[in-house]
Amino acid sequence: MKKRRKIFSPVYMTLLLIAMYLPIVMVVIYSFNAGRTIGAWQGFTTMWYDRLLQNALMGDALKNSLVLAAWSVALAGVIGTLGAIGMAKSHFRGKGALETLSTLPMMIPEIILGMAYLVIFSAVGIPLGMPTLVVTHMTFCVPYVYINVSSRLVGMDPSVEEAARDLGAGPWRVLLDITLPLVAPAVASGMLLALAMSLDDVIISFFVTGATTTTLPLKVYTGLRNGGTPEINALCTLLLGAVFVLVSLAQLWQARQRRRQARDREQANRNQPDRA
Amino acid sequence: MSGGKGAKMAGGRGTRLFIVPMAMVAVLFVAIPLCYVLVISFMTRGDNSTVQAIFTAENYRRLLDPNYARVFLNSMLLALWTTLLALLLGYPFGYCMARANRRWRALLMLLVIVPFWTNALVRLYGWKILLQANGPVNTVLRALGLIDQPLRMLGSYGSVLLAMVYCLIPFMILPCHSAVDKMDWSCVEAARDLGAKPWYAFLTVTLPLTLPGISAGCVLVFVPSLGLFFVSDLMGGSLMLVGNLIRDQLLKSRDWPFGAALSMLLMAVTVLIFGLYRRSGGKDLGVF
Image (cartoon, rainbow over all chains, first blue to last red; front, side):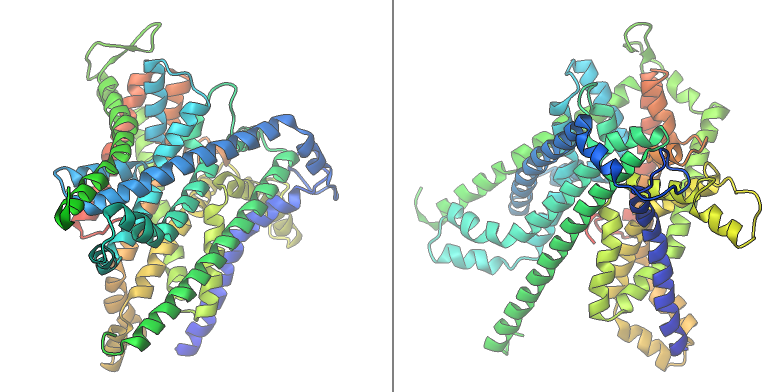
C-alpha cells in the first residue's frame, strides 16, 4: 500500500502540473509562430516582439498599468498597515462591522463592486479615467495588506512592546522602532499580493476605465475577444516572464526570512532551555 | 501629560486615529457604492437619464422570468461543478504536497503559486490555443488516429468548465495543503495502529480533520466563479452567466436598475454562503 502511494503521488502531481503549465507553454511557443492568426504552426519568427515594442498603444497600456499599480499598492500599503495596527490596539463598538466592510472587496465577486463603481461615478459625475482606476484598485488592495498585517500582529509577542515601553520609550518610539519593523515582512508580502491583484485585474478595471485610459490586462482582453493575435502572445509571454522573476524573487526572500527566523528561535531556545 | 499612563493613553488615542483612513475607504468606496446599488435596484429605468427615482419592485419580479432564472441557475450549476471538480483534483494535490519532503514542497509551492499570479486571461488564452480546431490537441488526436474530423471543443460547456476549474484551482489547493500540513498525524497513526485500513483511516480521520481547509477552498472557488464573466466569453461559449448578464445590462441594454437587482441577488447568494461557512465554524478566509 505504501509503495502504491509512493508511485501515485508523484505521477498525479506531475500530470496536474503538466495540465497547469501546458497552456502557459503554448502561449509562449505560439508567440514565435509566423502565422498571422493563432491558427496552425507556420514556422519560427521573432517579428511579433519587434512589432510589439514598436506599438505605442501597448507602451501606453504598460505605463498605465504600472502607474496604476504603483499608486494603488502604495496607498493601500499605508492605509492597510495603519488600519491593522489601529484595529489591533483599540476596542470599540462596530469594530467587527468595520473589519467586515474593509475586507469585503476581497470576498465578494468583483463584478458587484465593478458595476457599483460605474453606476455611482456616473451618478456623481466623476469622469472615468486614471483617478477612478487608482481609487478602486486601492480599495480592493487594502484587504490584502490589512489581513496580512493583522495576522502578523496577532501572532506577535506583546512583551516586546511592553519591554520597550518599560525601558522608557514613548508610544511613537515603540511604534517606529518596534512594531513597524516587526510587521514589515507582512506589509511587504501583503503589498506584493496586492500588486499581483492590481496588475491582474480585468473586471473592476473594465467598468471604471475611461475611453482613453487602458491597462495591459484590458488590452489583452480586447485582443483576445477579437480572436487573439501573435502580438498578444508576445505581450503575454513578456508578462509571464516578469511574473516568474517576481515570484521567484519573493519566494527566495521568504525562504531566507524563514531560515533566519528559525535560526533566531533556535538561538533563543538554546539561551533559555527551560522556556522552550 | 506626564507619567507612563498619560503617555500610554496618548498612544492609544494616536493609534486609534490610524483606523480613520481605512474606515474612510470602507465607507466611501465600499458601503456607499453598495448601498447606492441597492437603492437603484428599486428604481425605474429612465428614458434619457439611465435611472428614474420612482420606486418599483419590478426589477426583482423580473428575476423570476424564466429566461433570467435560467441564467442564474446555469451560473449556480457551473459554480457547483467547478467547485466539485476543483475539490476532486485539488485536494489530492494539496495532500500529496503536504506529504512531500521539505525540498520538494518549496518547489511545488512555487509551481502552484506562479499560475495563481499570472494573468487569468493569459492562461485561458493558452487553453484556447490548445483546443482550437487546428490546434495541438486536435492534431495529436488526429495523428493517433482517434478522430478524423477535428473536434469542436471551444465554446462547449466542457471547455468553459475546464477554464473555470483551471482559473480557480489554486484557491482549492492552497487551503487544502495548509489543512493537511497542520493536521496532527498521530491521530491517523493511532487509527492505523488500531487496525483501520488506509482508506478507512483517511475517510474517518484525515478527511474530518482537514474539513476546515476543504470548506475554505470550496468557498474560495465557488464565490469568485459566480462573477467571472470573461471566462465564458473567451472560451467562445454562448453560455450566458450572471456575470455576462450584469455586464450586458450595464453596457448594452443600459438597464441599470435591473443590473443592480441582479448584483444584489449575487450579493445575497455570496452573503448566504459566507454565513453558512461562518456557522459551520469556518475561520477567516484570505490567509493561507
